[in-house]
Length: 116
Image (cartoon, rainbow, N blue to C red; front, side, top):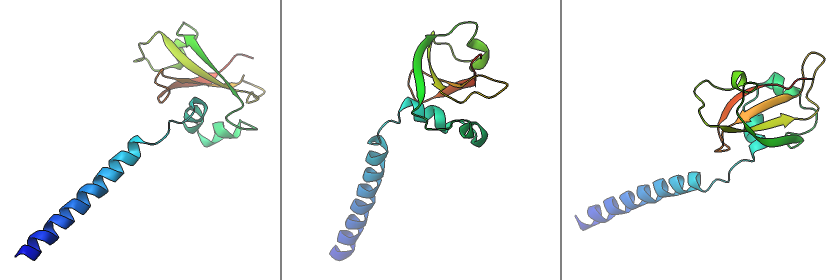
């Protein structure tokens, strides 16, 4: 009987530790750079427009204005937003690819192209 209780406690402890390690590892993940958050939100076709690296981009904190509003989610209510402009991604018909990211630097809220 004592052996059964000991084995049961050992199994319970093992499960608890495994769960704790899984939980702790998710919280310990480093944050992605904002350029990579923006890049990971792109379609394959959009990623193909970027000739060098996602790091070859400009990140700016902008005030949401009438030019930006049509390109971001309607539910976004903050006054500021990050824009990530991927350099050298312009085509014959559009400017550089721009991705808008929330101030938390993790949530993509819109994208579009800059004017040529």
